[in-house]
Each structure stands twice: as C-alpha cells, then as structure tokens.
Image 1 (cartoon, protein in one colour):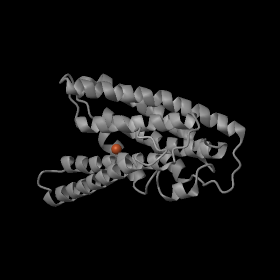
Image 2 (cartoon, helix red, strand yellow; image 1 turned 120 degrees about the vertical axis):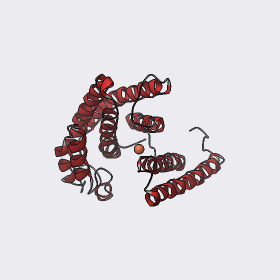
Image 3 (cartoon, helix red, strand yellow; image 1 turned 180 degrees about the vertical axis):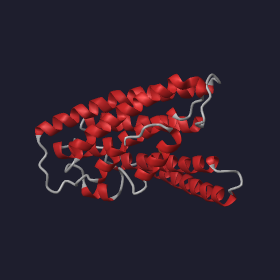
Image 4 (cartoon, helix red, strand yellow; image 1 turned 90 degrees about the vertical axis):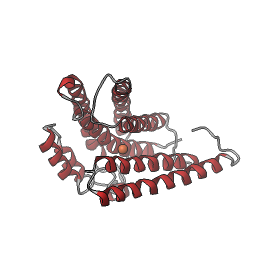
Length: 255
Ligand SMILES: [Fe+2]
C-alpha cells in the first residue's frame, strides 16, 4: 500500500519518464511511413501532440514534488536531449516542443515539500489521462505491427522495434494501473522483473543501433553488437535470479 507522498512522487516520476518516451515513440512512428501512408503519419502526430500536453501537465505538477536523486540521475532528460530534438526536427520537419525539455531542465526536487490532498487529486486525474492515452498509443502500435506482419504496410521501423515499443507501452500501463491501485512495486520479485525487462530493452537498443549503421562501419557495428550481447548475458542472469526468487516461500511465480 502506497502512502499519499509516495503515490504522488512515483506517479509524477513515472509520467515524466514514460510520457517523454511515448511522445518520442510517436515521432519514430510518424517518420517511418512512405508518402502513401501519410494518414497514419498524421495519426502519429496527433498522439505526439497529446503526449506533449500530458507531459506539460506532469511537468507543472512535478516542480518541487519529484526526488532530487531522480533529477540528478538524469532519468527525465540528459545533456543531449535538446540537441537531439533540434536535429531531429531539422531533418524530419516534425515539430518538437523543446520548451518542455527546457522546463524539465529547471525542475526542482522535493526538499521537504508537503503534498496536499488537492495535488493528490490532480495526480490521480493525470494518471487516468495517461492510461487512456497510452492505451490509444498501444492500440495504434499494435495495428501497425499487425499490418506490417501481414505484408499490408511498409515502414522503415523494424518489426522488432514495433514489438519493443509495444512492450514499453504495456510496461507503462501496468505501472500506472499499479499506482492507481496504490500497489507498491518495490518487492524483490518486482525489482527482478524490472531488471529482466530493462536488460532485454537495452540489448535491443544496441542491436537497433547495429542494424542502422552503414555496413562499412565495422568497428561501430562490433561495439554495438558486443553491448547487445553483454545485456543479453545480464538478462539471462536476471531471469535465473527471478526463477530462484520464485522458489522462496511467500513469493508467487506470477509474471
Ligand atoms: Fe526502447
């Protein structure tokens, strides 16, 4: 059971982290179509705009309410985010609202803030909006993947990337639902599941980079490949640890 303080802080941190990821996924999708499927590109752009609105609301609620530790860990933006947005907009012509990134750079941590019931109510509503929007994005991604697999649609995104971003959307939804039920996700089994999830995700990021490099870039291809294999090893270790935990008394084997 989460107390009000934890519920507010964890919700805002989750929405800052995944709201940005969801908006960036919408941009990956938007830029992946040919001229033939510009209706789908517009649908992706509309989702991007809706996630920007959600992110903007999360940022305004988060000032002084998220932990300084999480801000310091650069979980929401990195020193490269603004530049990455600038060049992405320059090459793709997809408008990217960089004022959100600037606002995030100015966020303050929660040095002794008292969380009010009114803030809790606003965070509850924010989470509800995030559930609705993430479900819409998940359905959109699934429709695209199904059409690609049925050879009805061409996109420059790998099918594995579509599957990957579908898993990330499901993870966001599951975390939102847990928060709305005030469930604590910090036991050993939850943490191990997250370890497996993120190690697999990181391995795939490395393999996406490997696949997007020019075939002459042998050294970079091998660096990306080695990183992916390293994360695969960590995934296998985390799976083994999860299986051991499942044997402990009082811990369920449900995933
Ligand atoms: Fe990812």
